[in-house]
Amino acid sequence: MSLSKHLIAPSVLAADFAKLYDDIIMVNNSQADWFHIDIMDGVFVPNISFGFPVMQAIAKHATKPLDVHLMIVDPDRYLQVCKDSGAEVITVHYEACTHLHRTLAAIKELGCKAGVALNPHTPVSVLADIIQDIDLVCIMSVNPGFGGQKFIQYTYEKVRQLRALAAGRNDSLLIEIDGGVGSANAGALLAAGADVLVAGSFVFASEDPTATIATLKAVDPQVQSV
Ligand SMILES: O=C(CO)[C@H](O)[C@H](O)COP(=O)(O)O
Ligand SMILES: [Fe+2]
Image: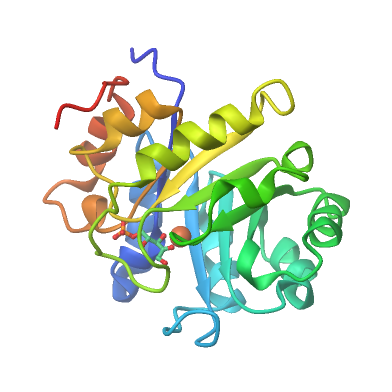
């Protein structure tokens, strides 16, 4: 049995949409902790993924929490439908929210965990005055919009900075890493202070996704050897 406390959230974006049901059942039966659901509007990011009807179909069969990453402008418009579509964690982008404090309060009001995602160019210091109000910070380790991109190395430093920023003010903060995550960087991310690893192509493009999830779940924190 693994003693690891970190969470694995396979990103459905990388699943085979023509056999989505099979992939949902695979995740249900794996050691994954959450489903990561990427919703894109073609405005905040230069891509459109899928919307709430598809998420509702996923929720019908998923036996694990849905961790929803909203890559959309003005996300307040869609919080209620997101909750009604099965979300347990709702993450909005810092860069997409004019009134982030109000948006986080609205997410919590719905009974969901409130997350904030940061683009690679956004420093963690922007969260200094609001860190105590956040359940989860998603550090983007690629520019959002597409799966299968190369992991940005500076992410390790951002995880360390965020853990230091939250110390004593939000010790239960979950730090999630999204983009280009796989066994080459998982151990170092955990050592830096990450709690949740999102993995899309690394899981779904592998020969045996169930075993790949188990491998990520079994990773121990490791100081990066570069
Ligand atoms: O938010 C995302 C893209 O914007 C995805 O969650 C992320 O890219 C995961 O895919 P991969 O593991 O293939 O990089
Ligand atoms: Fe994502």
